[in-house]
Length: 298
Image 1 (cartoon, rainbow, N blue to C red):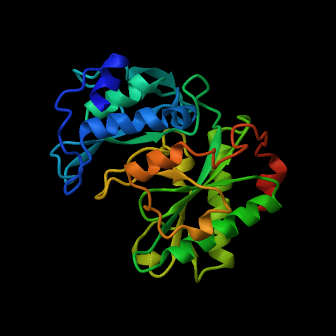
Image 2: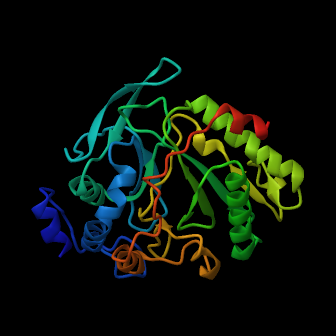
Image 3: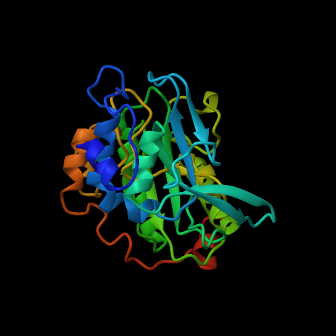
């Protein structure tokens, strides 16, 4: 099925029977079929956003690398171009606009799609913020879920709605959609102030320093994903981790019953994508990061 889908969207899928995750039955064709199923829900998150691609080189997940620029031989369905950053520097970027772009990634052994928080057409104004809860190895998922709810509560008190994403790794991303009015510096400063406020007021649980040594028994609230050029995993993307897990949106009502951040493999995620939208209202909400909100957490 995956090979036929690739042909239908104009992508030549070579070696469709290649196993992409050791110890599983997930082949290149499986991944093409997966993205065909989730595309309707995934494309609104990824379309026209600058990308970082995580590609596997050896088939055993041991040698992956990030790619942000076009390399020779890449399918045309993955577009490339340039944009000017706030710094004045020009950046080369990649982006996709349709299912053909996702399957072209599969053809290139892409296992993760990471996205900017802004569109390529409006690169200085982010459309979202992300609070990435990154726990110490010894912490259980219950602590991560509680942290997500606490972050949600503070954001709600500030007048901002948020939605939870199971990262497919260890943590949860609390995602805040924005009307693109505040620029990257304003958004990143707010996220840093927010993380540092939590670290000051609840130091037994949170740190705002990415050092693993200082994270012992606590959670790093990663605000660094909110700078221009930084990326975070796209909802519905597969992950370059054993077991073929995926980053899956869930509702706040569902989160308490989730047992881990990597509970959905490609088969479970594909089935879930055919259910009603978990992030109901995400693309309709109109909220801005105002000076008043930014001032509260300073």
